[in-house]
Image (cartoon, rainbow over all chains, first blue to last red; front, side, top):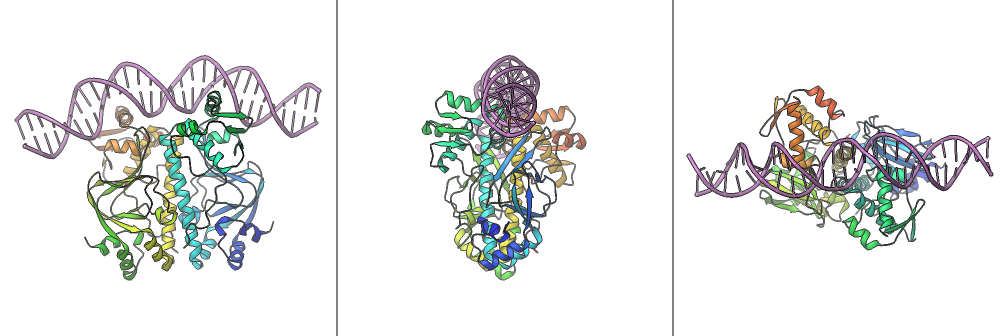
Length: 241
Length: 241
DNA sequence: GCCGCGCCTTGACTTACGTCAAGCGGCGTC
DNA sequence: GACGCCGCTTGACGTAAGTCAAGGCGCGGC
C-alpha cells in the first residue's frame, strides 16, 4: 500500500504537485476495512474525512424502525465525509465498507493546516462541496416530488449515459439500489417488473438493457438525474481559475 | 440603501476588515424585488449568488404537477445560491422573494477574484457550504425516513428552542410550512389538529404553544431537527482557525 | 360595516407504497 | 451434487398521505 500513490489517485488532489502530495500523504492514515465493516456511525465525532483507495463504501441513514436510506456510494479515488473538516461536530450519517479494501483517513486538524497553506486546494474543495450540494438538492427533489418509477427511470437512463454498452450491469445489488432510490426491495422489484412488462427494459439477473429510452425519459419526467450512485468524478476544472 | 453597510451585515462576511468589505461591496449589485417576485428559476444559468439585505426569500422546487417543495428560507444577513460561484452551470431550484426588500447580487467571476486574494474568506465559505450540506443531509433523512407528524414535531420543537417565549409565532404561513415539511396544506392542517386534540400543543391563528414537550419529542423520534426554515446563522467560528 | 378574496380547514375518497408472509432461485460450501 | 442461505420476487393487505371539493374565517378595501 503506497500512501503517496493512493493520495495521487484521489481526484480531489489531482491539481497538486509532488511536494503537496507528499505533505497530504504525510497526514493520511491507511485503514483496512472488510466487507460490511462499519467505518463510522451517525453521531460519532467527526474527526476527519476518508478516501477510498480500493473498495467501495456506502453512506447511509437508518430510521428507528431500521429502514435504510443510502445517500451516496463512493469508489476508488473518491473522498467522503469531507464536511467533517469544516463543520466538526458529529457525522450525520453512517459509513460502511461494501467491499474489503484500503481506505485513507485524514484527521481534520492536520488537514486544515495544509489547507491554510494551499489556497488552491481550498478552492478545489469549494468546488467539491458545491457538487455535493447540487447532488443533494437533486436527491431532495427526487424524494419529495417524484415517485419511485420516475426515480428508477432516471437512474437507469443515467447508467445508460455512463456506459457505452447496451447491457448495463446495475451498479448496486437490487436491495441496495432500492435503499439508494429511497424505497424498499419489494417496491423496486415490482416497478422493475412493470418496466419489463411494458417493454421499457429487459432484465436478466443484475443487468438491464434499455429498450425504449424515449418512453423511459417521458416516465422520468426530468432531463435525467445528475450524480450516479457510484462513480461520478470531480471535473478537474471545478473550483479552479 | 448603503451597500457597504448591507455587506457588513452579512454574517458570511463578519470576519472581513473594512478594506475587504469595501472590495466585496464594490462587486455587489443592489436589486429590489417585490413580494412574490421571482429572483431566478431552476435551469437559469448560475451567474452569481445573492444576499438578503431586507426581505425574505424562499428557495423551492416544483414538480411537473405543480406541487412545490421549499428547501430553504433566508432572511436578512444570509446569502443564498452561493454554490453558483464554484459550480457554475444552472441553478437547481427556484428563488422567489416572499417579502418586498433589497437583495444584493454578487457576480460569480468577480467574486471569485476576491476569493483568490483572501484565503480566509475561502475557508469561511467552506464552513458555510459544510453547514448547508449537513442541513440537506438532515432534510434528506427527514423526507425518506420520517413521517409528517415526526417532521412537524421536530420543527415545532426547534421553533421552541429558538425562542424564549411560550407562544411561538410560526415562521411561515401554514401553506408554505407544509411545502417546507415536504407535504401539502391539507395534511399539515390535519396533523396540527391531531396534535391539538391530543393535547400536545395549542394553536391560535398562526401561533403555537407547546404544551407537552416530552411527548412531542418522543413523536419526533430524533434529537430535534437542525436548521430552521428561517433564521439560522453562520457560527462566526466556523471554517476559521 | 360589508364585501370579496386567499388561506385554511374539513370531509370523503383514492392511491402509491410500505408491511407481512411465502416461496423461488442462484451460489458457495462441504 | 445436494444443502442451506441470502437476496430477490410475488401476493394479499394495510395505511399514510395525496386529491378533490366544499365550506369557513380572517383581513384588507372601499
